[in-house]
Image 1 (cartoon, rainbow, N blue to C red):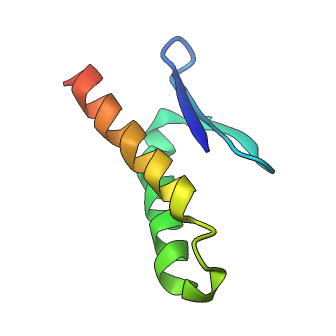
Image 2: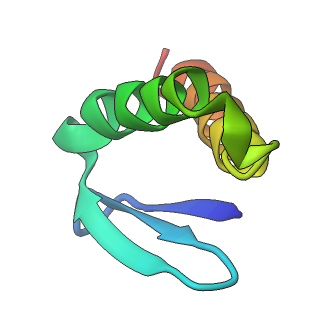
Length: 68
């Protein structure tokens, strides 16, 4: 999963093997919580959400450092 930020459009894009989606940056916390919840609620998925959660958490840290 790759997560990128478009400062001009104030959007972020999640790009994975089967997904490319762009959302307003204001929606980012909602999506991070959604994927954390999916990981917690569906342990039988055997790590299917691990890369997504890791990428979103890394993006959150990057954005916090960038935006202060």
